[in-house]
Length: 193
Image 1 (spheres, rainbow, N blue to C red):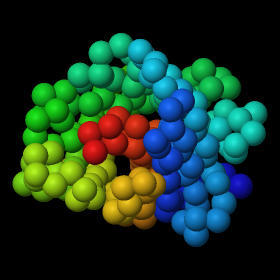
Image 2 (tube, rainbow, N blue to C red; image 1 turned 45 degrees about the horizontal axis):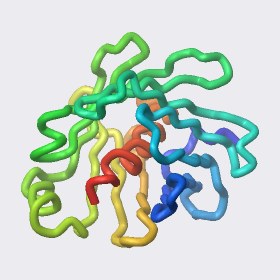
Image 3 (tube, helix red, strand yellow; image 1 turned 90 degrees about the horizontal axis):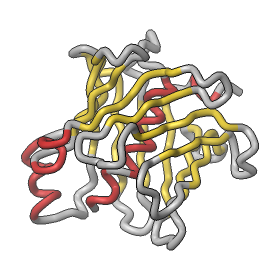
Image 4 (cartoon, one colour; image 1 turned 90 degrees about the vertical axis):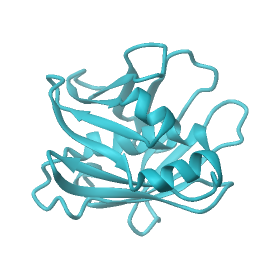
């Protein structure tokens, strides 16, 4: 099974764990785990590996922060076997901290090829300052074309995201980069909830 050939995924994160978060990315039916991430707590610099299953023997993706400071941080996405760079994701610091979450999608040469942004700046402000329990929805764009979305479901104890890249019928967005973004959205943006 090619994990990175699907158009639809379902991500579940377990938090409230003293020693880090666990993320499982399932197929659309939520029956088969496609990626497993065990994030360690209390790390100064994010370094996340996604494995094929909970045995953590076969790494499929690696996400590494370039710096310790999270404000506007960039995260390189690499193939853990070859070490080859797939691309990068960069958080738009000022706007993401105060208005709405926005990320840039970069290719392997660090050229901006797209963005990921929260659905509405009005809803984003309401989430930040009034009602943090309102689920987030993120749109994925390559250039100005929508290629998918990731939408939270309302569950304060088990953050979940429905992920749909079916608008990207030509698979222009590398699913490895797309799923790395989903992991970061749960890990980084999830800290705000």
